[in-house]
Length: 237
Image (cartoon, rainbow, N blue to C red; front, side, top):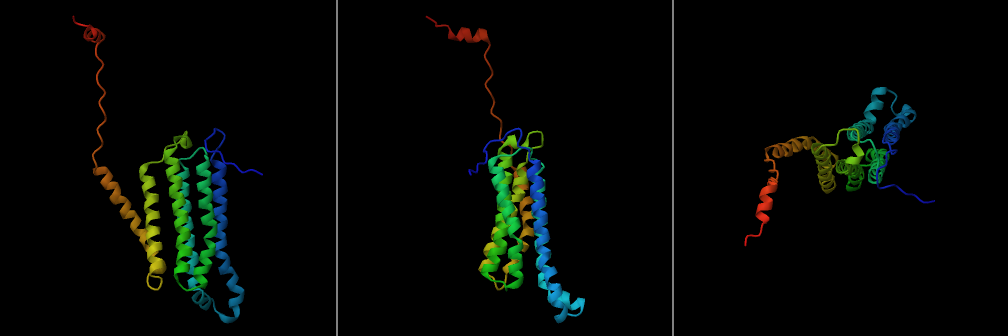
């Protein structure tokens, strides 16, 4: 069996089915996040007879669930905003979306790992590294959509500012990955707070863009009158 993804867009390659499929996969990933919380309830009946004690014992598990839930929702919302500009599909777009989905489906696994194990370079690498793949593939998708006008037929094209927003989030996650793995005992997952700095960094770059003077458009030379042109072409003897 041969697998082949077309590299060019075609009128029948509507993006709606890909969006529906992606939304369904994200919904399943969000559901999988809560399963560890459900599993601890029967076992906790003996060790934690009170509900308050159950919540206290599993506080880290609840925190990991809420963190990953918010992260997946934020990534899905960015994906949703991007595909408002997409009306057709291409090979690079489908492959980039597949990589993004892989990172979303994988995220419940490192979420369970960071709950069961203490912070270490390995746990930080697994969790934040998965986020880097997800955000990086989303940035790749924004570039693909921006560079191929055929993907946005009938819709507004993606702007340069939207690419910047995705790129700053990816850069913040890469920096968080470096700091979290380098200092697992002190910084570890706190490095994710750098995501709050992506917004101010984005606004700073946008302000520099606005202050930069627009390049002057080249002035085309005026056409010479036909009579003048003939006159200049006369060979004076």
